[in-house]
Length: 266
Image (cartoon, rainbow, N blue to C red):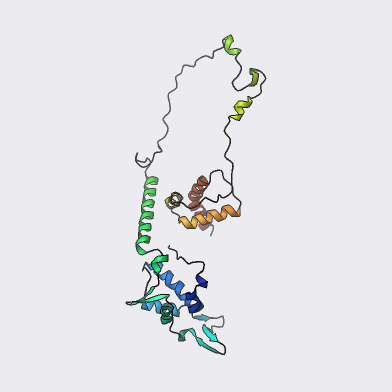
């Protein structure tokens, strides 16, 4: 699944104001078609004509057909009476092209065919590598620096040395105890104990980097979509973690399980 990029000022753009609400609907259909079919913004003539027919007629509960129109004072016309394809070109939203039209400045704002195919190939390669790691009980030395071999038990000598119970050792104070006999912990030893890293809410600088994107891809997820779900969930529940990268990895690993439970429930 690919995504269409729309600027948050789309509805207020002068070109959209010129072609109106229905022209904006035609542009959205055109962007979706070009992105889905990887045409780099090209719209065949018959496809563009189909955009005009889609969404013009509505049938109510009494099976009456309602056709959208535009009115100016006491006058009005149905949308089908306008030459919308010419209006889109005149507004410089589309451009004439052999066999159809082309969306103006498409490649400046939307992913190109080559970029989408490269991203899909990279994702497929990561998926194959992930499946290979799952199917292979042991990874090759070049695949990972972490060994998945079972631990080898270390032989222990059956000879057990007797504790040194000489008078000198008996009289030595216990390590970490004040005075050796009071039973109180040494304050300096306590001060040297490592402190746990504090838990914090969502950090402002915690963004979707390439490394974090790879975590989602290796789990078969859409990085941007899953990142937004993770961020919204954390903020909505005021989640706090001492290690947000670990929380992100754990989220990605559990996402397929959550998805499977939801499907089973339905």
